[in-house]
Length: 483
Image (tube, rainbow, N blue to C red):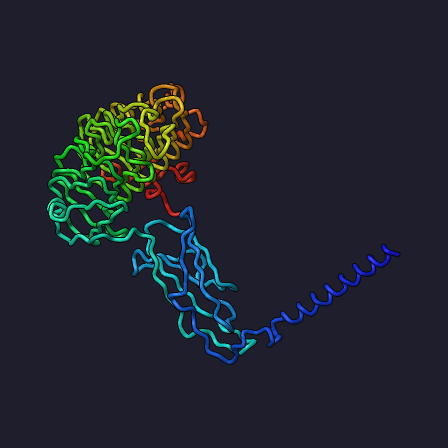
């Protein structure tokens, strides 16, 4: 009897729940005015601009756009544009996408100006008309500007008059679009992380004749700027101060001045012309450089001597990356492309992070006549040690490194972990087979043995004509046809 009672009670509860579920579904039916927004026969407005939220994802790959509900709406029409060049907006994703909700997500590119356009659509069931106008919201993910430096300025004089202040947050000095600037002496960066930024579409030009961006041990970025170094007689474009700043933060053992991985030294989206000196030099001092990055650049050297592009004698570089860039020399020269004589990365002991390994990354780069008669890399004490990683991917090497590109970039020994893939090794009109047999070597089996057919390298045109390189999208992406 007891079990029968429980069964009846359970069935009754189930029946009651189903009845409520049925009623709930009826009440939620879209034609039931009791559950409508109460807005009928109205001309709707698009969401207010100040209530539209635009937030990057944690990893910086996406933009999430949200807006409030407009009562009575039948949906929303959404578009996102890149407006770095306002006269030529670039659509991101689907144009005028109809969204039944209040959220959209799109791919995000760093250092970009965006325009969000949202329009409220009508709802015929309630005789609501769409908004007469869309709401437009400007957004950018650029670092806030500390100061704009006027066109025609001598940067050395400007920063002598307006020295970079001490700051715990990164500062940004902006140059005007298509501006013309000069620099004939040092620009002291000190211990403040600084970005010197031009315009993404209309790069300003800085003509350097002397001096350097003198760094006491801080993050520093050159971005969207063209440097004319044809008559540059300085030691290096970026120079670590030969005298330690008394306020410098040293490692745990007080030997190395630390520039952490979170504060990179970087050259980003720049064109450098006629460089006869170094791009980076450590002044033969004990610095620990967490990140040194060259990305989306075209760098022209013009030297017959043994002038390295990147040189450290005592400094240790933890992560060195060359990405989506072109490197070439107008002259057929010797010497080294990268020479790092610093110690093992484990000898640098930052207080805030652990440096257990060093990494060299070269990916999607084009090289032409870079140290044609000598060595691409020399860093047996720094990167070419056990536990470190050397990665060379999707790159084109033409007339470089005296037919020993992999051997020298790989450190000249088998200590570091070497990963290669989809690289082209071409020298004096032929594939360099020894790149696959020396130690270290390209053992990937993915190398490309055909001529990349660079269009006019002597005049700075590295447009790729080789069908294999085009099909596999190798080399600096700027020289490939659109997909």
